Amino acid sequence: MRKGYRITCIVLALLVLASICLLCFGCSSPEEDDNYYICVNNYEYDEETNTVTAVLRFTTESDKEFSSEATINSSSTQDNVFYYKATTYISFNTQIFYLKVDEIFSDDIKYHNEVLYNNTKFRVEYVTSLKSIKSDGHVTRSGKYYIHAYEPINGDMTITLTRRYANSASWYGVLIGCSIAGLAIALVVVLCITKNKKKTEEQENA
Image (cartoon, rainbow, N blue to C red; front, side, top):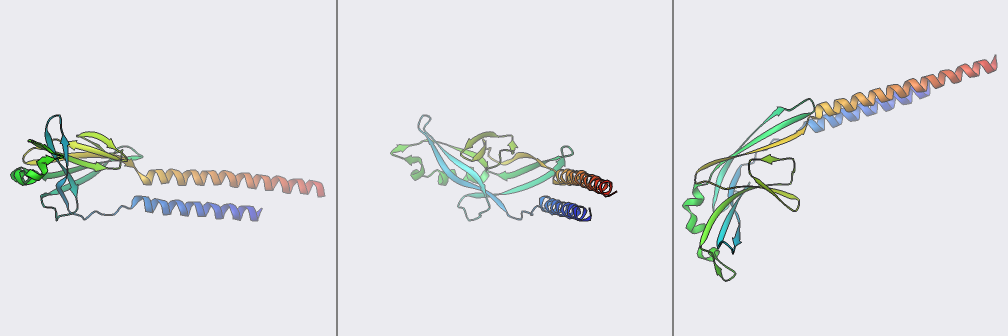
């Protein structure tokens, strides 16, 4: 009886300890101190409209030839007991790209595969591997990445991203509660079996 009781208690303690460790790990999130910039990432060509598009994307690199600093502000609110909703605002200014349009769309860029592209335009893209991120842009998928695209204006812009994620504390609390309940039931079963076995032995020896 004592042996089964001790084993059950040890298993219970280990499961609770493991759950607490997972809780601490799940709730911790590193702070992002990087500075972000928006810059010309690549060019796309459309023969039908004779247009070359300069694709602007976000990066932490500041040594790009044409770039503008981006400001990121995030906040989280509780969606329900088990989930949070994170909202991220990315603000930036595109004026530098319009002022440098002749340099960005140089003759070498306009002339591509023996075709001269006379029409030019910009497009802002936010790229992520997370399907859970929603935005106010046009979303397409490319391989394992999701691309949120925006038509830029000449001046200040802000794009909004939202993501719903799990409340680790609540989920791990349920896990700990279920573990304790399950092991408590197992302990009661062990005690009942041991008690019945002892009672049977006493009757046989009587």
